[in-house]
Length: 309
Length: 262
Image (cartoon, rainbow over all chains, first blue to last red; front, side, top):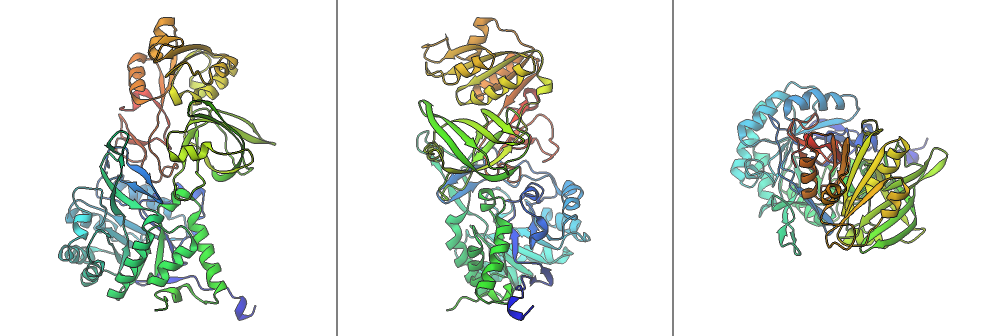
């Protein structure tokens, strides 16, 4: 085989963890992979990023929890999850059967609740990285409250880093005035990487009934409608920090994923569009490889920040 | 289960805003279909990214012959109106079959009372066929807004005794399905119901300890149990979420009435 026919190197390395490709799942859209395992070969994904897990089970919000909007959707699930005990016993045991990296998304109402989960997972060899959810707009305590103030974000990052057994990704919210400032705060706190964007706070009203469509009234907007915002913020954040950025927000194709990489992402996550096409993650892997071949680019890592002025 | 592309055989309006869609499924559409299950239909416009959960009204084929589905739905919003515009020969993306469906072994043989309200009527037709084939005595109490009695003849042809209630009194008993059941003094060993939430609450109370199965509806995103959008409050802590929330798309849509707090 001559050099031109060699397949591109799809692997990327973030904080010392090497992923077979840059394609991950966005937390909350993929469970722990069980449900989507019937549509895609989980072994082909760079990483499965799990639904947020807390120290104890969370009930989540009342229904309706989801609503479609033009080019996207609103959700206000409220981080329903079975708690860390069940997660370790069931979800991690399931993921152990696959040759993919596991990133556990961690949520809490208080700093202590985050730390409790992080400590529980510290010695867990089946977990490759942690993603700290300081950006969910749908719970009243915790989450986004930690992600909108730079000093608070820096402090919780430091505290998590002190007890974490794995590299730490801070997941940022776009619901701030200056994303670069938040990226720098996470970096200053010792984050190994940042991921963005979480959902944009939105609202939908049924004009016939004059009622809020979501029981929670507000919800997080995701899907293709938010992609240009996400690409812009990934670019701004990656310009502001030296740590790697994982980009997400409305990815619907391999080209969308490449766009995030060019903006400065070292890896990407597929979120709401899994609902539109349950096989999308695998298609993005294939499509990104085809893109590299088409453009004669030898490795996926070379795409990071490669936008031409 | 898979997402596959079906071919539209026909799509006709059989009552105001009620559409009868027939689909020939792709070979990859696999899995045993049970009455009470549903499929997700994707509007063609990518601006509408979520599937529309539609109950399975009838089905045929399987094995050597292609599966055909009959889906009867209300075109209430922009997405379902787009689906209603399908023409013969059009391609349509379908996710499914989804959900648990009815456990026929717990229903037949015996006297089964089916109660359907409005767009909750269609899934009970496939159930009627399956039950009469198993020797059950089926009474179908069907509640409509007016005299536009869609699917009534189909229930009769499937072997059910049909009771009609209409809100405006233009056919059958004026009132709701329980008014029709009481007027006919229909007796039953087991009840199955699908319709609006107030109707299901009333039927749960009416069942008074008899086995009663409710088919629920909720806003959904993924349809496969991952997003936790479509939950229903449950009496007990459920096995998946470990809180009092079962997933309508996965543990349901058919629940024992006593298990759900509606």
